[in-house]
Length: 125
Image 1 (spheres, helix red, strand yellow):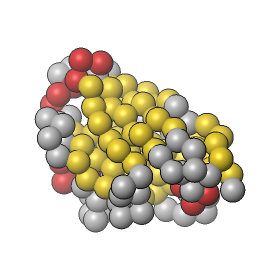
Image 2 (image 1 turned 180 degrees about the vertical axis):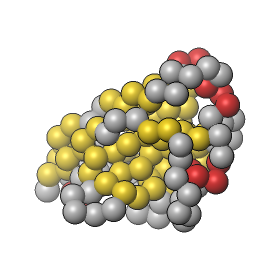
Image 3 (image 1 turned 90 degrees about the vertical axis):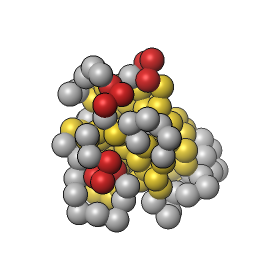
Image 4 (image 1 turned 45 degrees about the vertical axis):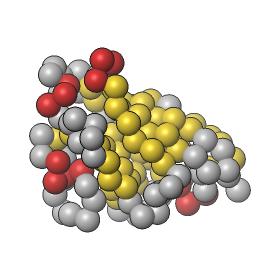
């Protein structure tokens, strides 16, 4: 499985960005997907996850109400819509995928099997 992330950039606080992650594997529908991020000098943390059906979504407390994860099975792509961005959202964002939903719900040490390259998001104050 190859994951290709895109959409990062430099924005101001309060702005929005949408990250995309395209998956190469078929059937794409068999994978749960999600996003993690690593801020400078910090550990990689869970941000959001979505089940393979798209029927369940999970978010870190720090992004609830501001970020929305979604997927388009026809395009083999998962999205992360980020609104009301804050400087503390600055990080490298990684998309990830796994057949095990438990790796993409947060609050666990389990990590997904497949990772994309990171995309930098920088939010200025």
